[in-house]
Image 1: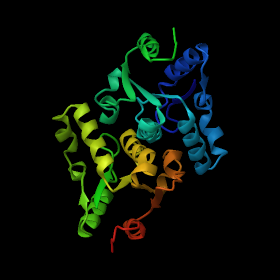
Image 2: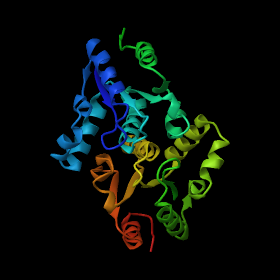
Image 3: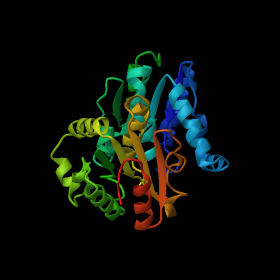
Length: 146
Length: 146
């Protein structure tokens, strides 16, 4: 499957190691991660070479074409929220699904639209450890992560 | 018209005066602002009385039922991004529209999904002053703001 793995570029990147861990798990299960450039240390430098409109149009095309979106949302950024919202707004027609992860110790500071996510086409996973993340990935239907 | 006026609850609320100004302009033009509770100083206290799921379901019902969404996104929060994305994901079917405002001096720090927004059903307005905000509101079709 094609997977949009979302994390913030201009916000708090302290959970980047978790996102990289997710990418390795997904790739090991044979999936294509469309957004590996977001995992680079210098993503901001790379993105600066493009106009904001180019980034918007590229990201939206990926959100529209992915099978599943997995997002790390602990940093509570507009971009991640936009991607999850855009996919879920289309999901009844598109059949796509979204899974949102956030650090459990941020529960009282992240948006309630993260912690309160209830959607037929998506689910939220609070986590405290990499083991929690792995357990969640194993639970997501069709991923085949071991 | 029913208007979803979005701003962050748990993020940077420094532009709240601008959002309150927008609400007054929209109400003076005869519109219903669905989200006036977000403009209260103690919104966090009020929201704490509800579960996250209740807030999510209430907000989504408003996003689904509004005619137009207007968001102040300078604080770059997940919640605002989710609302704008969700509306634009459905907009080709629903006929809804979204207008996103942000402070021009934050151009280099806000998400590129704000500054680069290009959508047949929406538009972004950077602003430097209340006069800029008023000019943008006058320009939005059907609002009748003077």
